[in-house]
Length: 247
Image 1: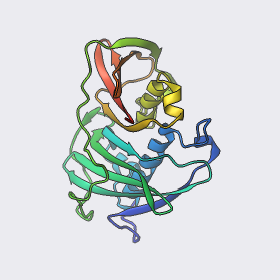
Image 2 (image 1 turned 30 degrees about the horizontal axis):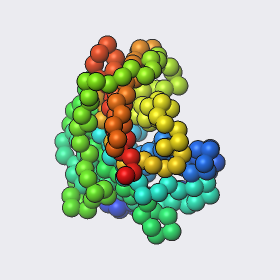
Image 3 (image 1 turned 45 degrees about the vertical axis):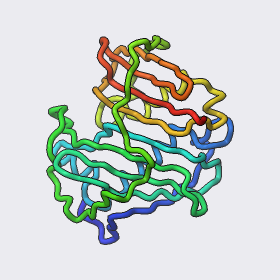
């Protein structure tokens, strides 16, 4: 698709929270929060001419490598949220994108995401084949207090679950969807801490692809201030999640 005449380097998009996106407490699920953020990023790429459809002409797609989400509070069923997004940096095969979620003018969520250009046939990163110079970059305009980081995986981690990758876990790029990793881990976390909104922030590192019928092991390491989950295939880490609890 060509660059939209309505393209702007900072995009704002409204979303209404419906009941299918909410947990039993009536507030937005963390997985659906990530979905809304990523759908907003996708909407910005579409009007800017670097969407999945545009990139597939060159067998390319954006894939998420790291993500940090800081949460003041979650929206509830019936709320209309405004998500704003802009790009901090974009060069060659990688991009850092910022996102914020607002309700009634109040910022409630900030996120920093790190994306890589991925060749869906060669299954490896490569430089973006499309022009992107029309995007104004905002390196100093940050959406989070802290940037994403490499998650430290403790060797004393405990095996808590084993599973196979099913067809329902895969996305359009034919690997496990990034939100699925989060869903698998949160299903094993303390439900009371989640339902009472004790998650202050969380980070995700996406390290290696997982594909259909892969056998994986989910590990957990709990400390007073954080819980770290990791997912391994044949003893190699594919994903790490750090949940930071409110003090």
